[in-house]
Amino acid sequence: MFELRDGFGRKIEYLRISVTDRCDFRCFYCIPKGYKGFSQPESWLTLDELERLVRLFSELGVSKMRITGGEPLIRPDLPDMIRRFGALPMLEDLSLSTNASRLTEYASLLKEAGVGRINVSLDSLDHAVFYKITQGDLDRVIEGLMAAKAAGLHPIKINMVVMKGLNDHEIIDMVDFCIKHDFTLRFIETMPVGATGKSATDYFLDLQEVKDDLAKRFKLEPAKMKGAGPADYVRVRGTNLRIGFITPMSQHFCDTCNRVRLSVEGTLYLCLGQHDTVELRPLMRSGASDDEIKQALQDAIELKPKKHEFQSQPDNLVRIMSITGG
Ligand code: SAM
Ligand code: SF4
Image 1: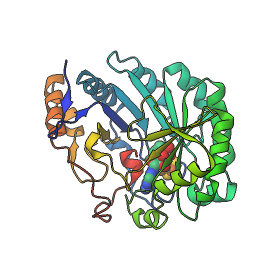
Image 2: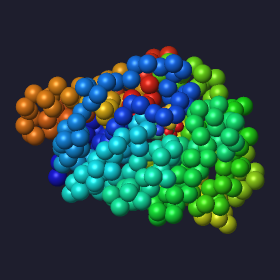
Image 3: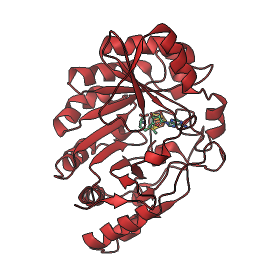
C-alpha cells in the first residue's frame, strides 16, 4: 500500500483543491479590497490535468479530497468535475466548501454527483452584518442551505469565522439556527493570511472564551465527528447539535496535520502558513509519466514544514485565502 509521509512522519491523506481563486463574495478577511491579481485562464490546470493529479494523489493514499476555492460553484464545469473525481476508485471521501450563493441551483446535482459532505460559510444571520463581512446576499445563502437540506446532503456544516465586536453577539443565534435545521456548527478563529491579515487579526477572538461562555448556557459533552480534522467537537446535551472549534491561532494542530493544498494553477502548498510550495503544472505539461509525477509528489511532501508561525510571525505571509482554499 502506497502512502505519503512527510519528513516529520506525518501521513498525508487529505488534499484540498482550490478549483478557482475567484469568488462572487468579497469576505474582507479573505480577499483584499480592490484585489485584481486573480489568475488567468491560460494558467489554470485543465479538468483532465486536475483529474489526473487527483487520481495520482489517491493512488498514493490520499483518500480524502475537498473541493474549495474561491467559490467552487462559480465554475460551470463543477458537476462534471465532481462526477469525474467521484468515480475514482481510490477516493473514499469527496466534500465541498461553498459560500452557498449558488447552492439552490446545484444542491441536487451535487448529491447525485457523489458529494458526501458540504461545508457552508455563514458568518452572520443579520443582513447588514452579513453584507459588511461578505458583500454578499444573505437571503440567497439561506435559500441555498435549505435547498441542500432538501436534497439530502448530510451532514451540512456551517463555518462561522468569529470576530470580536463584529459577529460574536450572534453566537447563540447561530447555535439556535443550527439546532433548528440539524446543521453542525464550527467556529473558526481568524488567521493572519493575505494582505488582509491585519484587519482579520484586529477582530481576533480566542475561541476558548466562546467555549467557556457557551458552557455557562448549555451542557457541553465531548463529541466525535467523522472527518473532524483539526476541529475539537462538543455536543450540546439534549440536542443533536455538535459544535466544532477550529483554533489555528490559540492552539495550533500542526503535529497532526495530514493535508496539503493544490491551487487551480497547479501550485502545491505544503502549509497554509509557510512559503513552501512546489509547482506541478510544468511537470504535468512536460510529458512526465504517472510514475514520474508520483515520485515528484513524494519528493514534494518531504518538504512539508513542521508548523506555521502565525503567532510568532503574523506578517510572514501575503497570501490570499481564495488561492490556497482555506
Ligand atoms: N468560498 C468558500 C467558502 O467561503 O466557504 C470556500 C473557500 S473559503 C477560502 C474557505 C474557508 O476559509 C471559509 O470557511 C472561510 O471562512 C475561511 N477563511 C478565509 N479567510 C480566512 C481567514 N483569514 N481566517 C480564517 N478563516 C478564513
Ligand atoms: Fe469567497 Fe469564501 Fe473567500 Fe468569502 S471566504 S471571499 S466566500 S472564497
